[in-house]
Image (cartoon, helix red, strand yellow):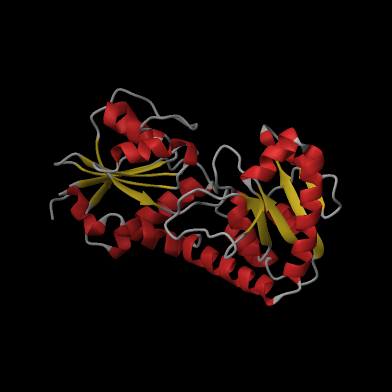
Length: 318
């Protein structure tokens, strides 16, 4: 095989950030488990070679630090895995800049699905895996997931912005919910996971994307995930009533904004239903299913297998 026929590029400058650490892990696995000779070009250097600069925020450019890029130097065909909140915008960027993107790996943000539909005839679209915030989170989850005596309440600790403010104003009327603002209750590392693992239920709300770190954390910690309607596409689907309970559907969300008194009554009824669910075997079944999903889709060794499968043993670049 021609030496340096392929190039892999990513930003490797940050310690413990999951995106950087996984891309280094992926690169090392490629070297150790394939016969492909592949040249590493740091993302900032690749950007300079193209007369550009690396972007270290969620912007739409090939040289975005959320990207893992692999391309064939001869054919100039590209594979990109992207972990930003607005991944499909990367497709538009490539098409508008004559980048021959042949395969794209991401977790979709529903508001951009029209972009996927527009280009799916030309590009292999691969709903993929999502990531934790930090590489060390795996170790923290392993240590704190074994707790037995947990509070019979629902915990949320995150940024309270946009529609979340309205949601919280309704949920705070019910003592079943323990709502914290990350601004006033910031914790990191083991301290953070040690706190949320004290609870049997967790609340996950959409933010910039339609998937959240909380989803993965709850699945790994054996916490029952209560969330809004889940619409993101992943390699192995996250399924309502199998992996999570849909606490807030679109109708309830509208009521929270327009008829909060009705929303409060609905939440009270849903909490009573949750009590019945907790006392059935469905509760433990859902915890098992969600934890299995975590193991199959969030453990690095399985994330590698899924993303590597999209390369089809590098034949996509021919």
